[in-house]
Image 1: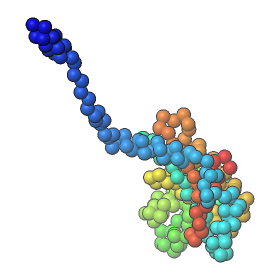
Image 2: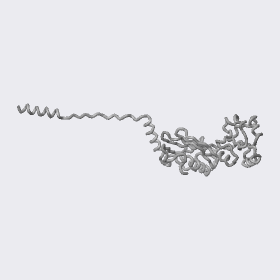
Image 3: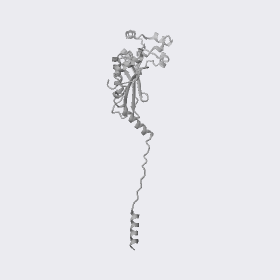
Image 4: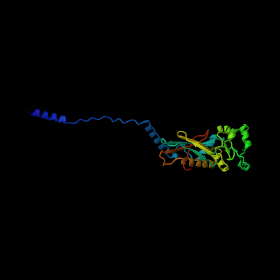
Length: 262
């Protein structure tokens, strides 16, 4: 009797005991978009590091000494290479740099029917300047168009007759581009400007040549730095980070230099 009662109690208690089981929680794999965001954030964090900690970091005069030595006295272009990281949707960096020391040769052709302007242009070493006669020479292909870097015209002259010749070369005067003007200062300013445009995660442009002085390279770098950093802000919704800057030439090494707030 007693044994059967105990068995009954044990049986009831056994039925009242809860059983628990556990299994591994499987987390959802991040999507491709999330992976890209994570990768970009890590890259932005990496690029934000102080470039002076890089093993190939040098001040600009020292870097130029190595680059000139690598070119063995040859006149070579000195190129700036910038690493850029941006959040998806950020506008790629682009614009124009007005270098205090022009990095390219300025050899324009200027069309004007104003005789006073012709003399004024020639005082600024602009050789190919004129009106109807110059237009006829261009139309007859008596002038090598490939030698010109820019094309300008004053507002009173019609240059449509040579549009098919100048247009494909990218030197057709155009009011929207500011190349139809009677102000020589504006022409000279445009001649010293150099365009830049970000490609993927890189930005590169010429900053001078190896025969530039250290002072000229420094001043051109400052002009470039001011323009590049003016193209974005820490307040932008889509963040942009400019990382390390390398200075190099055709045969020279890539040397990391300071670029921000030169």
